[in-house]
Picture 1 (cartoon, rainbow over the protein chains, first blue to last red):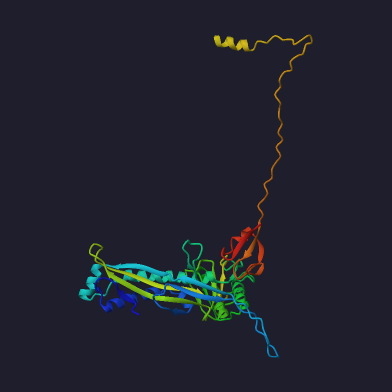
Picture 2: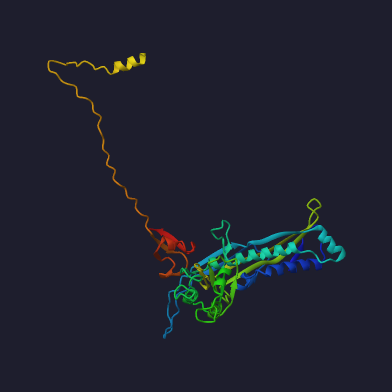
Length: 297
Length: 92
């Protein structure tokens, strides 16, 4: 699908210019895309407005019988169907008329700073959507991101800052506690660890009497990657399954797209553009995520 | 001057009247003096411990691991540290 569309009255840009704007927008957005590294992407039809999925309760344990099993009582599997509207993450920009004319007439590279800024902000917002979710009122989440969908919560009052070496509340202890919660649900390594920059810096210290920083220890312990994002609240972090096929994914109806239109003379004759992406984080198995809610004390 | 005269007339003693052959002296009206004893009311101190129900699948903290639906008690100070999405406060 063409990711750059001119929806206005006439074609204001050459194909090269369009491609250039799109490249710059995606490049700017990539700076912040931590969320997309945490979960696989499923592309669906661009016209989709809502996404529905089923969640099932686990059946009871299987059996081993020496004799051929006779009549068995079947499990009553609870089916829960959820339908969620796919949100649009968007930001608009304007390229000045003279910048556009200079590029068109004399071949000067198109000034795309406004488009890049819009792309960067859309990337940032998409990260928040994937990691935290979307909340209309700022408190209750209408769409749960990975953190808010987590079924495991490691809420020990940890001392990452004041006593990182503490046996029960230190950095190693809290990571171990979170991992044991995941393992209880049969979610095994590798894991990814996502934290706020504040916690990343707290973990960038040497373990007492060693030359090994906590970050190295964490990376070996989780066997996955450590990601830093300002989208996750300071004092919190999460450990997610690193290969989460069938556990959670990012359902994308339209990936980064740029719509443009030539503005009227009254509006300034510039080039109006809208950067947007339409996608929805879906968590099928909430046990595959453990959030850590009280870090940094 | 006239005002002074009126005040003077108020203070004049009335002549004692007799209701009958026996003299019944009028008892002076003495206002009842009420004594109110104030008993100190001690305000009950707010209980420092609250009962909490787990909303998230598994919650682990200093007291141990709790499954969804189970309850435990914590101090109000500790309560503030929990993610509000993880717990439901049931009461004292």
